[in-house]
Image (cartoon, rainbow, N blue to C red):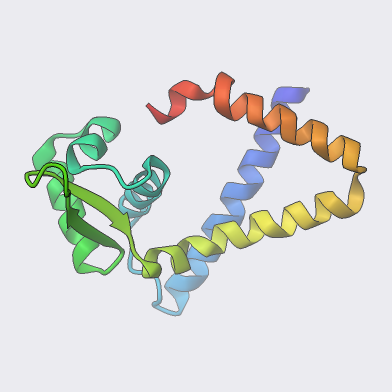
Length: 145
């Protein structure tokens, strides 16, 4: 039962995001392909990785990663900044344009959080937060590697 409920919550967040992205296609606002969206979400989650770190995480060749990065830079969703420590490396930074795009998903998270605060007691919310922290930090530590 827990697995089904958890999967349902995760699926609803994804479906909301997809619906909002497709609305943008209708208005010709969305310029990211599906693969580019995955790349951008990964780059943002990795916390401004180097090109090599992004390539390794996505398990793709460096030339393939460079091609994807170049396209994202051209579209204005990503910025490559030369590392101060090692001038041969570049860090990848999502731009404001990307965060405006990403906010479709984040705004819904805020909406759900507001509903949780209205529906549940402070003790229940604290317990949920504690459990989610354990899931994030300990039980899913391998997901961001």
